[in-house]
Each structure stands twice: as C-alpha cells, then as structure tokens.
Image 1 (tube, rainbow, N blue to C red):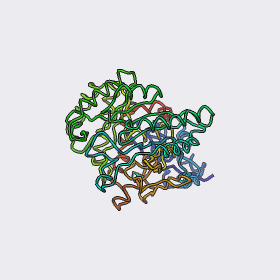
Image 2 (image 1 turned 90 degrees about the horizontal axis):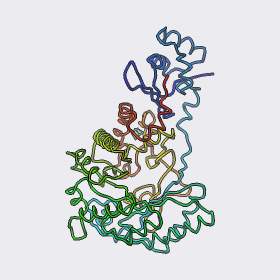
Image 3 (image 1 turned 180 degrees about the vertical axis):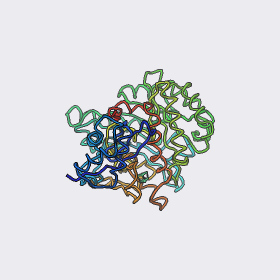
Image 4 (image 1 turned 90 degrees about the vertical axis):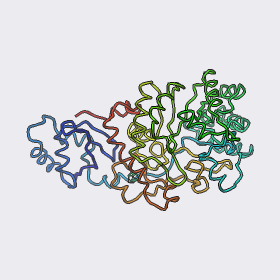
Length: 443
Ligand code: SF4
C-alpha cells in the first residue's frame, strides 16, 4: 500500500515535542524520534517496507518504542489517496440554534449597536416581528427540533420589550413538544438589563429562560457605550437589573465587549468586573467594527483572551469567547467547515424581524440570506489549503470579503494561526480540554 505523511506541525520543545495534525485535529505528545521520522518522510510517497528501512535508519537506538507503528496508529502516516479526500467533506449545514431578532427597537441608544447602526445610518425604520411572523416562524422551526434540542435565543434590539411575541413562540413549541413533534427547546434571551422588573423576572422563571445581560467592563465604558434614549448613563440601572435577576435565582450570564480604545488596562478592569458581579458564566464578544471584523490585531486579541480566561478560571467562571469554537473543534475532533459553524457544520441561524434566515449577525441579514437547502458555501482562499489552522478557523468570512473586497482578513488569520502555539503553551487552561486531552496522547 502506498503511504504518505499527513500535514503536521511540531510545537513544544525539541526534547518534548507536541505534534499537531491539521487534518484530524489531533495533538500528540511525541518523542524526538517521531519528529525525526516524520521529517524524513514528509513529501514522499512510500510503502510499508520503505517505512521500516527509514525507521531503522532515522531512529537509531535512542527510543525503544516502535516509532513508525505509533505514527500509523496516530493517523500521521496514512494511505496516500485519502490525503486528498480529507478536505472534501459535505458542506451541508446542520442548524442547532436560532437567534431570533424579535425587535430592532430598544430602550437604549448605544452608539456601537451592530443591530441598528446600519439601519439608523440608512434612515430605515427599526422593525418588530409581527405576531403573524412569530407564529409562522415558530411552526417552521419545529422541524429542526425533531431529533435534537435546538437552542432558541431571543435577541434584539431589546427583546423583553415584546414579551407577547416570546410568549406566543414558546406556546407553539410547547404544544409541538406535547405532541412529540419536537424536543423541548432550550430558551435564552439577551437583554440590555435596563428595564428588568418583577413581571419580566416572573416571565423568565415561568419558562426557565436563561438570561444574558450586556454589561461593559467598567462604569465609564458602560456609560459611554450603552446610553439611554436621551443620552444618559445606564450603569446603575443595568447593575441593579443584573442583581435583581441574580437575587431571583436566575444566574444571569454576562456579555461583555472589549470596544476599541479599551485595550489599555482592560485585563485589570476585567478582574475588578469579575469581583463586582461574580457571574457564573460570561461571554467576551469579538470586538466588531463596521467595516473590519476586528479592531484588535489577531495576536493582541489572543493575548487579551488568554489573560481573561486565566483570571476567570481561577474564579471557576465559565468563559465563552472567540477561542471557544477552536477548542470545541479539537475537543470533539470535528472540523469547522465555515466561519459561521460552531462545530463541524453546526450553525446558529439569525432570524430578522421579517423571518428571514441568515448565517450572520443581523447587521448583514439582507446580504447573507440563507438558501434552501442550507449550504455553507465558504469561499476558501488559495492560502487556506496549506493553512494548518483551516479546520479550526473554517475559512474567511464572506461578510468581510464582501465588505472589504479582499480575500483574507489578516486579523482573523493571525488569530487562528496564533491559536495553536497559544494552546500548546497553555494546555490545561481551557475548559474544553478535558475532553480533548484524551486526544493529547502520550507516546
Ligand atoms: S487562518 Fe486564514 S488562511 Fe488559514 S484557513 Fe483561516 S482564513 Fe484561510
């Protein structure tokens, strides 16, 4: 049989190398002999007989294991033909969740709102989902929950301004679940936390809706980025809203965004923030801007997230960030086939107030409506084919390509290509790793 070496990279030290395989998303603790033999064999096609000869010549007497057998067992030496096939997976998307924009209207007026800024600039009215659309959408969604629990995330604008819409959708799913047409969905809502009251709290408790509150890293950042309709500060009200949700036992999740200009001292502020709010879980959003996807450099973003993850881990706070999809891909050994995929081909669909489906955050809804059947249609660049991070990254964002006219977003590439060196230097830090550590195999 003709054999070849899979694409691999070596991290760690010369004496204690870690070998990464981009095609299988596996990381191995190796002996220097494994690295020597891989280097000897790379870019060749060979047979098992050749392999034994190479193995003896390259390895000498410094390792008493069976180097070439290890490499075969780890999938680093494999039949030559499937190397080409490895890139060629189905690009059908599997929908695992819906981010439903109930309304674009809001009781705040945040200058950097990615939901409404484009509409405001274009002087377009902010939309709210009609009850008729809610009913049609909720019924359409039932089919996606037939065999799995689908995540329904109510989003805005401020979705809690329209409890009647949320109530109607849940009633339809509850009836469908009773008829066993779907698994009961998991429910969550993302709120600005400005108008939390007893009625809202009892509504959230009634349906066991998980709640995420957007709060910025300190009072100044919050008051600058999250203003009332009359331009006033909102930090006190939002903090009080968060505390009311906590007191009611709802364990609110926090969503926080490092906005441009906050990199100075952000980590120290984040530490104080964790101490002040003591959340059980939080999301650090990726800092988007209107025409580029990240204002931080890829390496700056990685460094910031690493420090934040480390602080949160010390306090046993669960953190979700741009690192999470990469960790999940390795943890589950499922390749990301699209930048919109959270895992393999799993995607969260955004639904705008008119019921249109999109891959994207709703700023780009009209540009990236989903087709039926749903396909991922990633526009891979030539550079992606030889990129060792390609299945952690999922390829370039179509939004970026359309908005910038460029093929690759260098900040995104720097982020994903810097991820593996960061990971191998911090094994054990990330929550996803216990499941993936089975795959970090010792020789
Ligand atoms: S990191 Fe850049 S080059 Fe690599 S797969 Fe992603 S978009 Fe392509």
